[in-house]
Length: 258
Image (cartoon, rainbow, N blue to C red; front, top):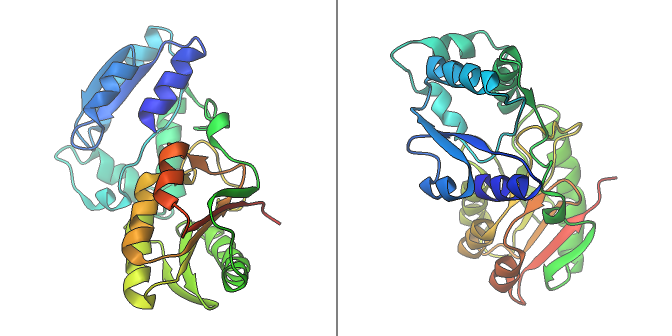
């Protein structure tokens, strides 16, 4: 996602500066940006210093792209700055954590834009996307699972559930979508359905649902037969590769929210 966002932003005429995290960010991002600066995880003072430098150089907007595993919130840093930031939050849920980062940017005079600003062509509308159609049982599972996933989203609990025969098998936690899918396969066996939604009133600045080739690989590993994701709110990368991975035996559909 960081590479695609950077390429699309530059194609739109932007100069792109990137803050990368050691051990998390793909070094290949360097080929897609005008400047790449590396920081250790949890180096909040270093991040603030970098923002001040960029703001002085004329940077006024930022986009969050990519993923930092939520469980890193439990890692302690020597300065204690990150720990104090987290302790000041009402909860440790994803939206609260990322809102804190947005506030840091705002304090530096930099506006956080929707992460989808340059990704419109990667967000499918409602309808079949790849593979076969949903069968009747899968259709009912999607409808049932959609309501549950949306309800969980109001509490900022994941975006993905695995369901089979109208029973919830697995709910996404800190482990992420792919691990949730594999766990669902371990519990329910072949034929489970994956439902991935945006949260109600999704803040498009961060934590936007993403589907990629690795999502389909996880479904293959789990024996899952179908994936329904939210239309016009989910970023779908590598569409041709995804279609090839889906083949003729998995259903991949974009569903409009009610």
